Image (cartoon, rainbow, N blue to C red):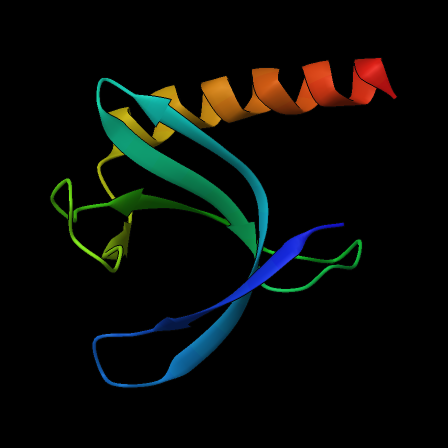
Length: 86
């Protein structure tokens, strides 16, 4: 079952996103999320900017092209491994 979370945007809008995968790279947490659970979903990569010990995570969309490409490749590999196991 895919976890569904509510995220508040900078302008106060609440988005419900589906967490497809998560990973931690060099001490930073990343989420691969989609805007729906269907085949036509749009995927986003979010980065956690909160400090260790904070009670709430602070996720932002990854917009740096190099970081986005590197994290995307890791999520791609994780998703392939997940499908191979099923």
